[in-house]
Image (spheres, one colour):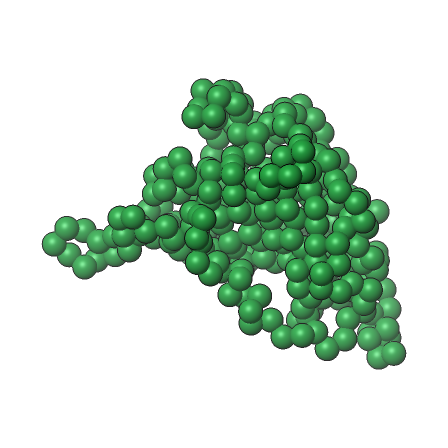
Amino acid sequence: MTSAPGFSTPLVLSGPLRSPRQMLADQEYGGHASIHDDSMAEKLGFRAGPIEGPTHFSLFPPLLERIFGRDWYERGCISSHYQNMVVEGEEVRAFAEMPAPGATRTKVWAQKADGTPVLEASASIGPDHGETLLEARMKALRPPEKLVILADLHVGMKGAEEERVRMDPDQNMGALYPFSLNQKLSVITENSPWYSGGDNPWGRPVVPLEMVSVLAEYSNRKAAFPVKGPAVGLFADQEIRMFDGPLFVGEDYVIRREIAALSESKRTESYWVRSRIYDSTGKRQVAEMLLNHATLKHSYAGYAEAAKG
């Protein structure tokens, strides 16, 4: 970590407090309202529908561009564990350790105005990222004892088909994300002209970091992973990695999905999906997302009885 000249004091870069907006109140998840719906969230024991985790990713590019420059957009990786939910009206701030000159990895995190942690993450530039935060977390996973909701999944299972996706400026991104990129940009916590115009190093509008998650999940139902339901899920861990980025608005991409891990906690069953994003030919990988879908056991009718069988 960088220190001040003449001192060993570590330095931290921070952004301003921001108020992220909740845009998923009308989200449909598996044919029913999602946890982002206030009434559904309250039924499950939460005080209100939370803001989706990757919304907070928009806080980091100003910090990571300052640290890594253009390389962040082309070869960057953020590997995040979500810690506490945020509801609309709460303020969040991003932090990043200042690494030593030439270092390709650092620690980043976000917290609420009162200091409550929101997420912790590693941030790095490739091709050698070292061990990311989620790679370390996956190594520590214990095999699940008995899965009910995810009983028909196995590690290595691939999606049913290749998925072709794109994100145009005014394209509604579907039931999971009932808004467009332009609608997101009107409320995004950290906007940039690079997201809507070509005045950047690549000459084309760039998909914002938080919207990479939207692009990657847009067609996920086509993978047809046999998850039992209805049951309500949330994002617990998420990694977005660029191999030959950035991703561009109005560009066609191919997505291939695979189950990377299965895990279980007292309250959840989780399936970790690796979504590889290729160019329109399907030959050159440009990005990848690893996402831990944590499914709430008590949201699945008859879970306790099924677990005994």
